[in-house]
Length: 285
Image 1 (cartoon, one colour):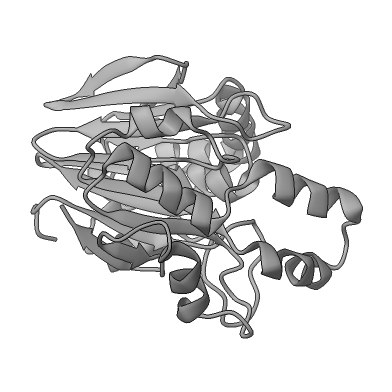
Image 2 (spheres, rainbow, N blue to C red):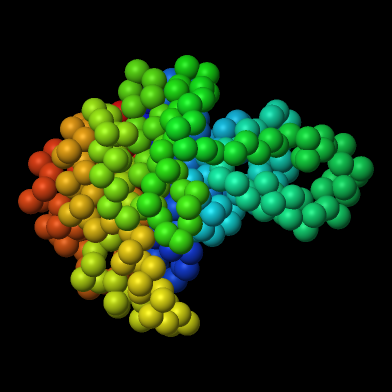
């Protein structure tokens, strides 16, 4: 893998379900200033990282934006798989309150395997290799030369959902999942790349029908908790960012809606470089 600054969108589908031919749920890899940072761990993140040429044993830093399963379901399996692939150094995981419960539960569920591999294969104890730190609104931390900032966004019914800014010589901002949120424009001001979740409102009812085991509450959740592509474009323009990428697409797998629909939604409100998310897309910074 080249160390040139870039972001790889590993999984670009909004929501946890996968179907034949669909994209995978949300995960990304930020490569900046020689650091490689995983952002969200939806189903498929381990394969996505390998497809980018990254050795899982080289994991050092992971951020989870919020506790919806399409953003953290594969955190435990990723860390365990990295361990079986040779991980011997420490991994720091940042996430909202409650992520530590998930990690403890995952370790309990795999305790027999972990203990057996320590005794039978001489591996270091996975439980001592991972530290979970809480994300908080207004948080500022540093990963080597990279400054990381967190902003709480509007993703009901969750209260702990965080946009993230990663700044070195280049800066990339992730919106996380959010309803239209004007403060995000200030948070992303002047960034080289804004990666914003996006939905096509005209496709949402068909999406809910495909899910098949929800009711009107699912439709209401999507409509009140996510951002239409046109509103993501407005925020990018207000923020004066250099480029916009649409991520966590709702829908990502409806044959009746394609790239032209996303472009048409964005075009009246954004005139800069646009990247439409697809699994494996690498965006230079």
